[in-house]
Length: 62
Length: 551
Image (cartoon, rainbow over all chains, first blue to last red; front, top):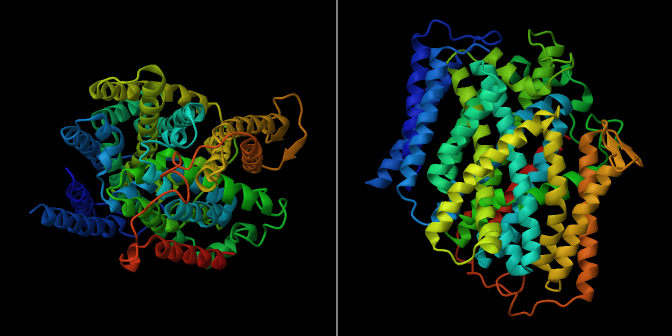
């Protein structure tokens, strides 16, 4: 439990999967003042960030 | 606010995850040292993030966004002339003494440097401060649960208390630190997109400038007189009160943040903790203050956003952040944003409860109630204290509910506790002639003078309880800063005066505690990016550039 990167990576991967899926297939990705598909952009960012963290954490563990 | 099923899923996932971390960490905690200071084993990048995440509580996120909407870019003074220089000072000049003294808490340092009574006085005022701080976070969290879940305030506060209790009880400081880091990332991911979307919608910085009062978009230009700027502050209140006494007082003596650095795994890591933390801290104004300003610009340009209105019909700045989120985020991102907000309240609360725990167990219980018990006993007391601290916080949450602005009461508490303590620490660490009696009476008189100033002056109908007002401030913020200035000055002057007439400790007793009596490993062989002085200089130059750009 000394390396925090693994849990951070897992959590952000999970969030990234949920939000990216919404961004790609969801019916309504806009808000009253925004028509940018923020779910897709932030979702992909979270996937990359979570994946990177998990990779760093696992690399150190092995 | 309407949350959909996905948003609830994200929220539940997050809480399940933090509970899981607490449970995993518990398996590795075996002594009271582990539970309370993490056994000095945490890597520097984690302590650095925890260092700012501890401070990234309710008042930071909601309060700074609200202040951005109310005062404009002037709010950045809390960062670029306040927190950042103070963090650099802690890392370069103060951390060596905290580290070499091997103290487990700030009051314990006072005991080693001065005596038992100085430590006792500080432990009591500090414990009260942590209870107030966590109570204020609990109040804000309760309000959010109320809004999201539709529960009553009573139920919401009990729910938030239960959640905090479970995870600090399970893992102590390590789980609190680990969760803080998780929360830090979540807060950045949850709020930074809002800042980008809102500023774009408002037409960029130039577009915001054209829709805002000039006093809102300049941080220095209108500081000449209190009447011209929205904060009602003049240059002495700003430089001496906000920048020096309040900011240095908070970052240098607030055990909550110093404790994070003391959990670091080496001397060098402990010194670098506040300096590395200063880098992300420096850009926080763009994430928390700018969305508040963009809200005002959008409202005044009729872009479809209206400033939130409270029950009494006036603008409620505390609601700016949440209403902006629901205008700009679709379901999914809204879940991430709300989770980030909850996480920040949790971090504020859990950090304070943990600090209360450490100070009570080591500095009050072990010192005055029961000495020389087996370690398992103190571990048990530490866990029980967590429960008591949470219950006291519930009480403080109800007190905070009586105030219309949580930041006012918080700054007031800081001006009573941290401001005089800063003088005690500066003299204690850098002047070997400071005596125990000087420190104790200086601190006591400084705290009383804070109370006297509050009792004899008035701002926004607050204060003046000592039977009359001799001065009226144009804002509560200005009053808080001047209380801090008076408290610091009285403590500083009285400590010196009394020290000159009382007996000081011998040089041998001051070993590892005072400048000139400590030995540290040489740093000459470190690469430049790990040298505290180099890191500090880079951060200060960046702050100078920001100040000039937004002057």
